[in-house]
Amino acid sequence: MASRDRLTEVLVAANRPETVVGQENNDNNAAPMPTTSGANLNVFFQEVNAITQDIDRFRENINRISNLHSRSLVTITDLEASENEQQLDRLTDETTNLSNNLKNRLKKMESQNLRLTPSGSEALARIPHYDGLKKKFMEAINAYRDTEVAYQKQLKQRMERQYRIVKPDATQEEIDAALESNQGNQIFQQSILQSTRYGEAKSALQEVQSRQGDIKKIEKTILQLAQLFQDMEAIVVVQQETIVDVVNQTAETEKILKTATEDITRATDDSKRARNKKRWLFLIGIIIMIVIVLVIYFAVRKPGSGGGNSSSTSSAPASAGDASASTAASIPSSL
Image (cartoon, rainbow, N blue to C red):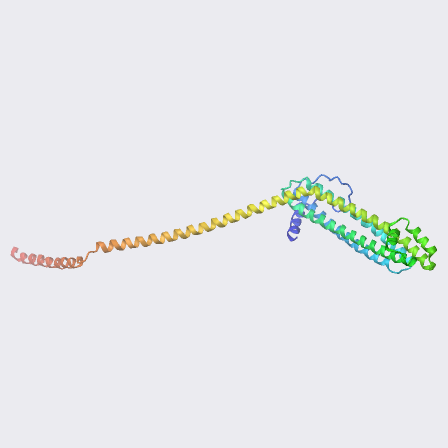
């Protein structure tokens, strides 16, 4: 995340596009991409941040819808129930529009990715972020669908209790038929005529009629979410080939880097061994040379050669003395 933020800062400093990002656009046709790769990524990362914020808002709406569902199940006045229903309808419409907007923006982003070279640096930077956004949005869709299904189940359980008020001896099959059938209100009305608890039965009928309207709205929302999820899965299928290419390129690059690292390690070890071998050979050569010199030295210096040298040395001064004496004797005779 830190590296991505740093990259974004550098790209913003290098090239500040005038494109306004984050606006709602329901057009599925992708606009031509900017000519500068840096500008492409700058706009892309801004859109990633904008979509991330909208997905978070989508999840916040889901939590608010869940709270309104819970409120509708408790005992409240008719006025409070009406206000709660209005809030729920407005929030549901807002969330539906937001989900459609997110879907269209992700489809536009996907179409732009398909126009890139799968092994290019821009594709390698964009596709993982796009894939993360798509996954996050699909998880939010599932969360919304789970919320609606849970509320639908609670409504049916409440309607079942109301039906048992009207007809305590009803079997589960009769209750299921009343809840699932469009003729459920008629079944309740017939039960009211036969019931000895007319007041409670009439109140139960009014609530059942209201809850059946809520169930129809929920069923509509669930169908819309199912279609939205299918649309997002279709984007996954179209994008999958590009993602596989990117993954394969990344794996191949990692394999090459690993092989190169192993080769460098082996070369370094071989170089160390070669240097050590040279050192040993150099030391051995020096030792051999020292041995040869010593052998030659002792071979030339024979035993007894030292005494002969001393005699020669001592005889030399004697000869010199004799020569001096004879010279001195010859000088007077000549005079």
